[in-house]
Image (tube, rainbow, N blue to C red; front, side):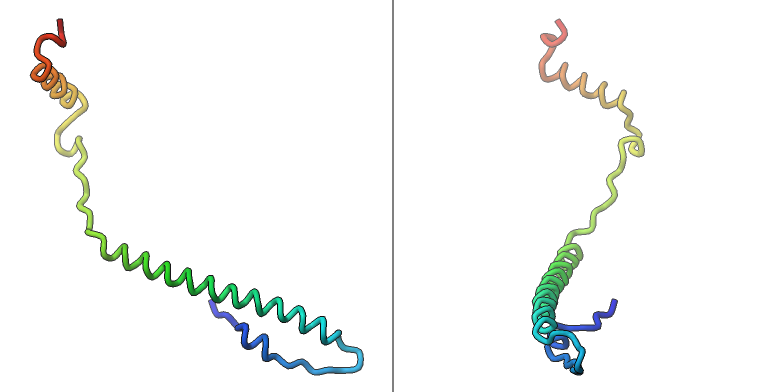
Length: 99
């Protein structure tokens, strides 16, 4: 993705003048607007590049995550979990919970 023009190149561009040419003041005014846009684009691109660099750096500095073992891979099923939960409730709340 090559950018062919910069705001400086637009500012310094010289056009040949002839008898039936465009209104020089109109062209200059329009080019001034284009230059302002290019300057804004250049600032935005620089900000985005810096943000991208910072995010990549932050991402590289994150600790590497180990894959989480799924309950099924560990041999645990929903039934096993519910059974354990029930046993814990009995232990914590005693027989009052089931009376």
